Image (cartoon, rainbow, N blue to C red; front, side, top):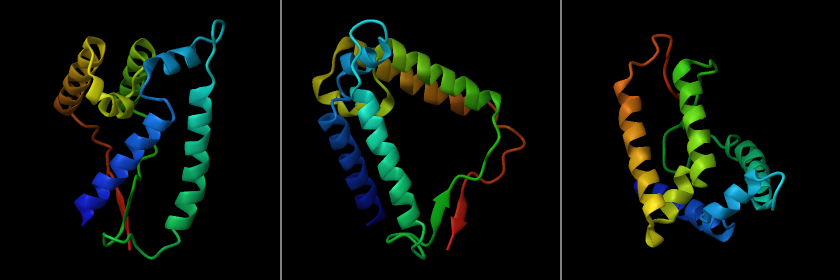
Length: 147
């Protein structure tokens, strides 16, 4: 049941990206074009996501436990390290150059193009390289289980 719920959540996320127009890299690049033909669509999609998350987290975390798990898995780290800052920088540069972030890139697989394929290969190589780098010794548990 847990796998089915994860699949449905991913499907809903991808559908939301597609309906919001975020699978079109021209919209994202248009958002970054502040002094040209600026497209505010991304700001509205992001705003809707922030509002939904703000309300949803408060409601969900009042529950004693998730429907299909013993406890909530929440991040506990609050520090900034080179891996996080480097990854965030690479993410931003890749997003700005291609117009895709990982969610819309995967949601766009049905209409694969050469730029999309290059991005997906670079993304997989980046994930592999990140796993090869040694983890920070200050890293505690990556999640907190609340029951």
